[in-house]
Image (cartoon, rainbow, N blue to C red; front, side, top):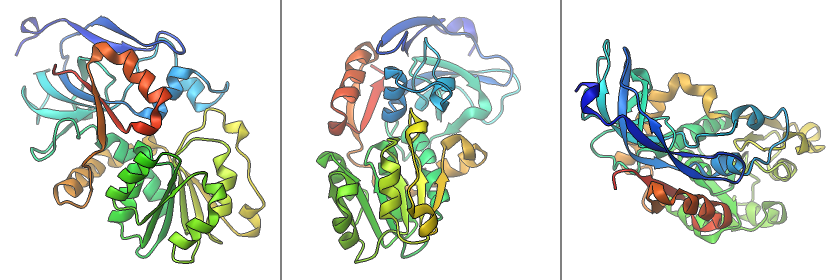
Length: 334
């Protein structure tokens, strides 16, 4: 298909500045050599990342300060259909359904190497979860899950949900999830969590201990990105255990250690999706395979669908009523 047969105008979500959301038109180029042009079907809001970027509440010098530059194009995971392939592209053809790390936009042009085919068994509005699963996989790798493990996941948002499912797939004996939102805890149970604890985990140590059959968790995965959660996680993990920081705080200088680190020989491991892009394709394959074989429960993960024109309402929802949301999808098909 040649470029002149394709629309040269698209629409995309943009944050012009802190607290502002708009849908704007943009020019869509053709595919150059080694590239493909995509027509988006569905894109998934990464709630924590995108609300932090929208609010603009992060300290100078933080990862966020480098990452978020206004006007900012949010979003980093979508399912799309290949519209056009450039020269020197093999393995992809117009009509192929793929997922890619693209922002919330009707169209995109990316390197062919950044596209991953979606199996026929995977619904188009579920495939974008693969990127969040990849982020959580980096946390699972840092946790070094093992059979009969005791795992506590703090935060039952999208990354927390994926963290639960990796721990279950790895054979953990107890997978406990702490959150303040009952609906999110229900989804964690549907994903295989063995127990849930509602409320501040720092105040629920006894319940967490009981849910772990009397043993403190060997691994605590904090997905919240809240600076005040690190001391609580350090107090909840067992002696010589591991705390995995999978949430990225806007104010990392507010995080602080406790005496537990030295006196109880604890390990703290940071985990960030881009750390393991070298195994991105393998992780996606595993994620899709686990869904197809019924070992990754995904029913109910998508809670809301929005037309792109309603993008401001979508972000208002995830900002003000996060506890009632999980997968918030932009439907570009119409």
